[in-house]
Length: 417
Image: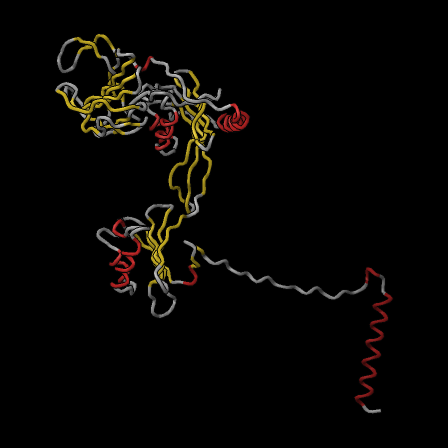
């Protein structure tokens, strides 16, 4: 037998012996083939923005500079004048490029090749919306919106000087004060807030790309004013959202408590007041609210403008007839923003605070008539608007309970010492 044959027989015999040994080993002692280890391949997700895979482009981000126009920008990225002109004309119905404003963000997507020519121009008029000018092949222009993340926040405080200052001390944007004033505009006169009043509020805050872009709606709030709780719960019925109290009554009333959102009550309704200009005692049949010149003055209720004029003592004024019972008048405006015969809605701006006529400083004198007689509007108790409908009561009670629990869990923040 050849040498190779002997080696082959020896190998076969050795393998056979090994197989026999393995077969007769106890189960726990049998050898096993080591498992095959497969290493996962990490695949990075593409960066998607404005609906584009940014990995496919060279990306440039910048801010519109003063006196910078679309042509100035695109010329730098090899887009010729004729195409820029075509783009501007095509975009007018979607977005007029003449409205591009300094300080706004924009993005340029350029080709990845050596040419580096602009493929797309994206302009952001605000934090949410954007306009895409796609110049690949034929020109395409369209609008888009970034994803907005809404988070629920809460705040609280005890009034020491003003609602603005209390929120600022709590590191909460004072804009929330305006939102709360809107919610309670029919039930609380924010010019009469006193030290010791307190509030708890649950509200929404909006975020885009992890950055706050402002507040959403107030969901629920409890405002304790002069020792009395005023609760507000947001609820939608018939696809219309409004605020209701804990008894399902609407917080909305026929008239706002004040024609200004914020300011200072300087003189109330009285039959005897020392006039600061005429230097004599006389009736003051209105309520004065001081505020900076130019502050918007709101119609306190729906109605028709029956006078918009100027007189020696009243200065610029607007008068509104709301129905057969109620009429209101707003004096000393710097400028009127309503015309005779115009129908105005509650909250519409009808003019601006000034000091025209017989006035010592910027303020609005608010006058109120009931059945032809001037009265103190702060002493009137107006009925609420439509309450929660019976068919929506079960859903309202469920939401009310949820919001009450959230408000009650808010810890009342103590004032800074």
